[in-house]
Length: 184
Picture 1 (cartoon, rainbow, N blue to C red):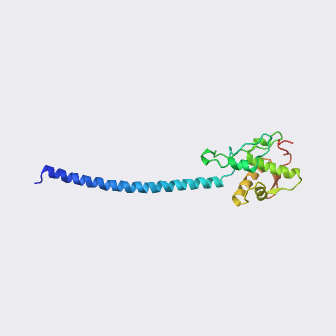
Picture 2: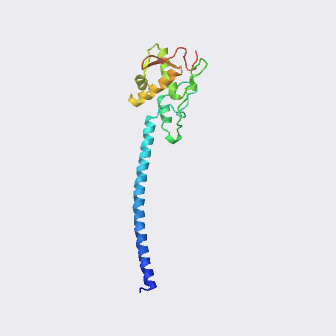
Picture 3: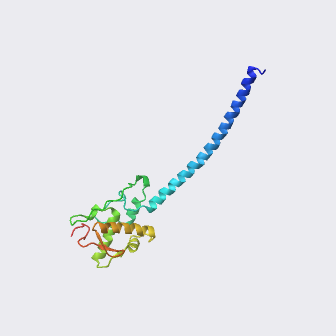
């Protein structure tokens, strides 16, 4: 019959073996966890960057109108749009329905820039602009994402009465909308 001390030693050796196996498994799981967390962070960053690229540039907090009511230069709007996504609001800019007493300053910077460009065209008695032409005018690459973002803004301005679309894809100021003050 084995001694009590011998039985205790056997159980101690078995317990030690089990502890070593569990530690090895824990180390393996920790390594897998580190790889999975790194991959998860990379995908989160990728999703965030894609969201920044595809997000319309009409979100609130992307800049402010100048004191005279005109839209700022392109460089100023680009500086403010490089803010981290966490600081950006997820809601879309509100474009109010145009009325005679409404000033351009109620629009976000990007909408003001579109209205300002079309007001300049109207003042010079030039025809409507396409979104591709607007992109080039604003110094943007005329890539589909940028053009579609401008088209979205222009269509929203048409729907709210600020712009008119005399021909599909061609935009001009709506009748009655003049000057930076907005009214007539």
